[in-house]
Image (cartoon, rainbow over all chains, first blue to last red; front, side, top):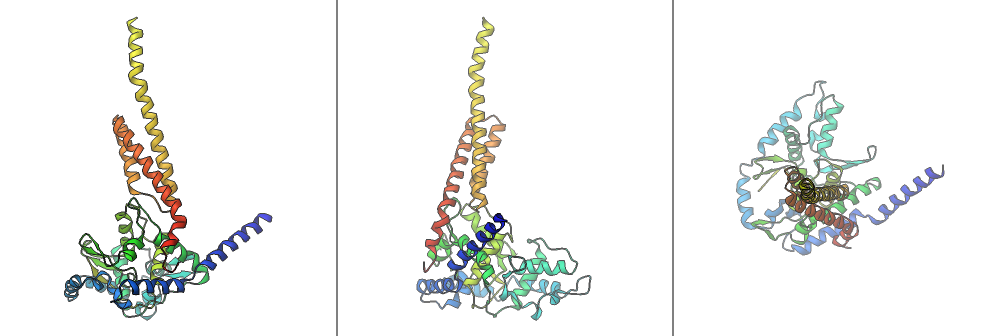
Length: 274
Length: 99
């Protein structure tokens, strides 16, 4: 009995410690102020265009590319998938309100599951609830569906919520973001905060704020539309750190923290990037 | 007499090689243990596993010097990754704006 009481007290103390330290709104305010000072010539919302907000020459090329954006096929295919009924007669519209225009609410902390649920996970949950097999997180169909839902959510502002129960996940994502990793000993924040707007070889480093608004992304390097966690994995590799599986807990928490930092910014996905 | 001499010579040749092999195997095992410790906190380095693999292959091919060098480097990078993991448990907070 004593052991049980001891364990309950330890969990409660740990939970209270996290709750006492974490203040997502104060973090977001400081995050915005950081970029307002770092790039005073840019309005915060301009950062939804990533590096193209900071490099005029690249922006001109990118805008031309937007005349015939390569991610359009993913949106069209995603729409077909979204509207195709499951074997039981239901469709994705039965799981997602407003014809799928819900990306601005993801990721969300689901108390019953005690975890952060991303849009990709929610799509798979919908499939399972309707008797369909879940997609692999690298599956093209899943990326197409998320591209369509991102498109439907365009211009809506992010409104990610961090409830008290989700604070530990938020803090874990925050810690992941600011921790040095890999042989090169770099944190995500080194490239996308301290060095945002500077060059890494020929490329301009984008600002962390607004980075979550435009996924999934058609990358010219990939020659296809791909998910956010693919980019996380590549960032890890680039600093010599081991990458993690897509939708792993650490990546979902990282997405949770970063998306919260982009709260109130308009969605503009899918997008094209080099 | 000649037979004893031959055995003695063989001991000089075989024993150091065997000792090296054991040392390399121990280094590989230690590197892997340390790597897993760092990996558990998402601080595993890609280079460590590459070096461990390099050491194992060299060991299989009886290239003891190559194996020893790779295993030793693997141990070193694994130690560095654990040190990074421990350092970052507190250091990350210094990078948060407003702190």
